[in-house]
Length: 327
Ligand SMILES: NC(=O)c1ccc[n+]([C@@H]2O[C@H](COP(=O)([O-])OP(=O)(O)OC[C@H]3O[C@@H](n4cnc5c(N)ncnc54)[C@H](OP(=O)(O)O)[C@@H]3O)[C@@H](O)[C@H]2O)c1
Image 1 (cartoon, helix red, strand yellow):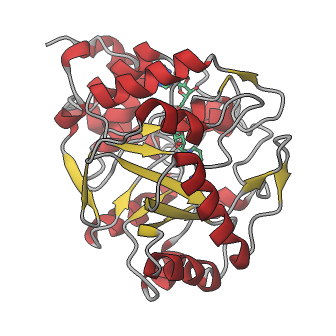
Image 2 (image 1 turned 180 degrees about the vertical axis):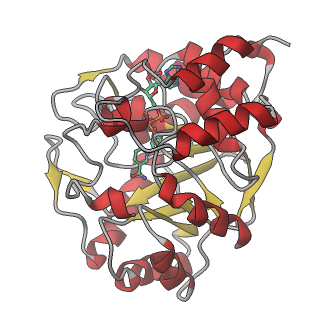
């Protein structure tokens, strides 16, 4: 079977509440520009290309798309592109969005929303996506500390029927427990991947034990973060890619999916060929030996000057540089 014929169903499924999704999904952050995301001076992507990628993703069986109202460049909005490309939406398509961070119309970061502003952010997503309720809304948290007031505001919107399921992003175990005391949490979306925050391994496992999906971002981009994948990778990753005749990005995605049946993938791309490769990565089964070699890289101390210590200037949500290090 060629990569073009492999669909997202090959990755298996997991439930976000009552919504079953294929484990290989799609992240919309890369669709609105070339190069670094979430920066005001980014070069907008051609509209036709972004729409082609979205429609092809659904053709390939992707039924879980991650987005946000603050995913936009000067000329493109991820939510508007999703609406234009995919509405009327397929019955099985789950669109997950996130609230908390905000950018002004010029693209500059605003202070994160206060609880009273979350309803407006939810309604902004509803308007742009053309929906009357949102399938999954993640509260994007900006650092450590209590989140009850914020999560409680979203739980009220869920009770009011604007949101079907709630998730969290940028959180640790204490914040997950705090939220679960208020309302069910179906997913946690944190940065994670080979060499990306290995200190989170126990938390990833704990989410699975509680039936909570763990949805990593930056699984491919790693330390490139908003700037994107650098093309460079560790010898272990590139060696296994060469041996299996696949790309380093596919090795990275396959490894994250091997972390547990509750781990989903939302690789972001504006490149139709990369989309096909990412969906095909859901069918890969890595050997015990390959997993051991990749686990060793994941947990290894970061060598000085390696790609895993590079910090780009932008942080989603305009958070302080060290916020993600502890989340
Ligand atoms: N909750 C949060 O705070 C948060 C933060 C960041 C992102 N997210 C979400 O998570 C999604 C994933 O994160 P991400 O897009 O930043 O990072 P990612 O999926 O780890 O990697 C994207 C980068 O890798 C490249 N890439 C993708 N597939 C590739 C392939 N098969 N071969 C080679 N390069 C490939 C992309 O460039 P090309 O476009 O050239 O393929 C882009 O530079 C986002 O799209 C967004 O929906 C959430």
